[in-house]
Structure formats: C-alpha cells, structure tokens
Length: 101
Image 1 (cartoon, rainbow, N blue to C red):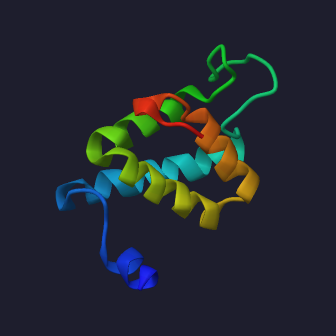
Image 2: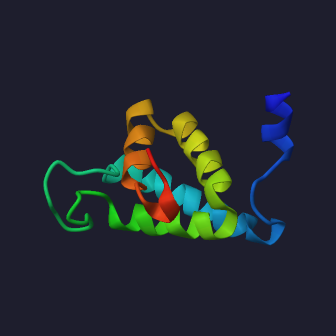
C-alpha cells in the first residue's frame, strides 16, 4: 500500500511539480559535488558547516509542502544518493521550519 501511495501521492500542489523536481535535482547535484556538511568552515557553508543553498532549498520545500514534502524529498535522496549523504542532508536542514534530524 505504501508503494501505491508513493507512486500516486505527491505532497505538494500540482502547479509546483516542476519547481520541486528542479530543486530535487539541485540537491542531488549538491550532494554529489559538495556534500551537505563540511568538516571546516568554507565558501558555500554557514558557520555551522551546513550547505547554505541546501538549507535554502529545504526552506522552499517547507514553504511548498511543509514537513511532509521535506520527508518525501529526503526519502528520494536516500534512493538517489548514499545513506550517509541523505543523513547529512537531514542534519543540514536542522531548524529549517523546525526540522529536527
């Protein structure tokens, strides 16, 4: 039943589909090239060593569909990236809309 829900249910408005897909692809690219966390402060990362653009994307996803959409995207990231990178994304999103890793 969860498979059918994932196949047909999208936790965002239909008019936002193109934007959500674009943001998802950007997250994949960030994960593969930069990671979502850094071991030291550097360009593109905030003082907490979290990827700035990934956090901005998380905020936009929250604005479009709340935690449900963020969880949906994180689940997709687990399928497209390594489990470690998906966990890093969850930590990078800490406090975005109240997100807790």
